[in-house]
Length: 199
Ligand code: AMP
Image 1 (cartoon, rainbow, N blue to C red):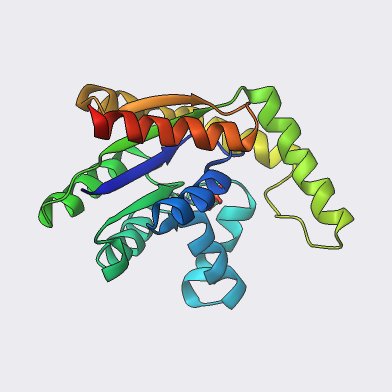
Image 2 (cartoon, protein in one colour; image 1 turned 180 degrees about the vertical axis):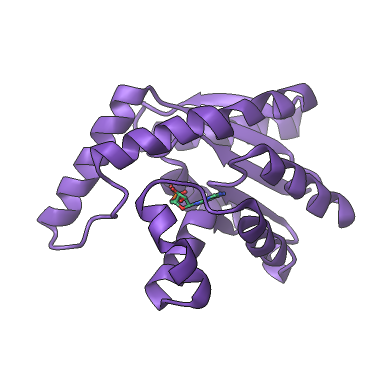
């Protein structure tokens, strides 16, 4: 049984939080392109320097860079039993590139789970995340501010949301209500996986 999962949804929907919990309970790795890119920025690697400004401004890093990172990561041994993609794919070429990469190794996606949260909630979550980081004496994410958040949401609406029909046609798309408490959202996602394994 493979568990090749995409957690889909706008910035602030809780994809990262859920991916982390699910990765632990399902024993498959969380592959977050945002985390991978932030690590490159923190290291000030050549790639990190190239993407830093784009990320701060809430733009998208090029499909070519992202597909290179993900294709390499998916070939690692720990992805054999499955993986949880978080924050990828975000554009149509990324979705197509993912399909090609998986096809080549005889794999396919099993679930695209969309975490649905309205815009107002996403805006207030972003502000809360910033205040919490500052209260803890941490540096908030540079893209956690209202202007950049607006831009990230617009990018999501323009480039990411339109990928969904592609997965709906394949019959692997389902939705969960991301405004519910974290543990309830996790339960709902695990329910989707359990139910279809039993079917
Ligand atoms: P995230 O943590 O997923 O919200 O990602 C933070 C930032 O990293 C995004 O606003 C983009 O600038 C960049 N990024 C992460 N994943 C991708 C992706 N799949 N495609 C393009 N840019 C990405």
